[in-house]
Image (tube, rainbow, N blue to C red; front, side, top):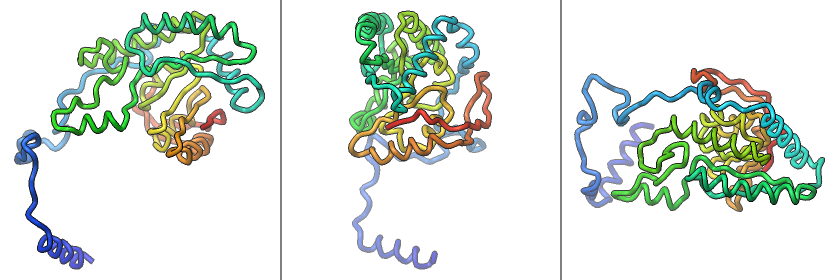
Length: 278
């Protein structure tokens, strides 16, 4: 009962030392200092800027027919490996995060040549990580007093590496890079850290990745159920159960909130994705 809860709090206060309070790095302030007293929303939001719609980004950097054929053929080949219909080994290769498209293209050119040489045994896909997944170390650094807030977040979020957060330029750069790699004849894989980025780049990717930290996320499982690519849920020893559960969940239909290619919020209904694996 509420009376019992109140009594427990009172007993805890009597048995506990006085609270230490906040450190100087997080001074206490009256709540009204966060914003006008009439305002109740976005009190801790500094700014909201317009985002380019996925449809506009796609129109600016459109996938030509030859590259579309490469993307679709690679999806079919990857599906065959996932389903056990092909004895080739699926190999993902790529840098942990792309910060310089020119360096990424140099890597892609070398990888494309090697992939063509070994295509009878290996199905080589370049992992193009457009968003940098946070680690436990990043979380600790961001939470520390004076911490960097998680550090650089990736090509899409900060393409100029200067903290300007020009995501419109980031999505354009990401599409150009994925298109240039496709024109080398090399299929690509993209890890989706959030659920909006796929609307901007999914037409260019042959494979999708969901990191071990997102494998248990309902939003990412719902996203995977509607993606047009095979999806790999990354699993570690600690997240193996979550990855297996994600595969089961993503194979079923879902309904959830997202945005359309026009950038309009909508209700998405999916059919389920049978090409998911841990």
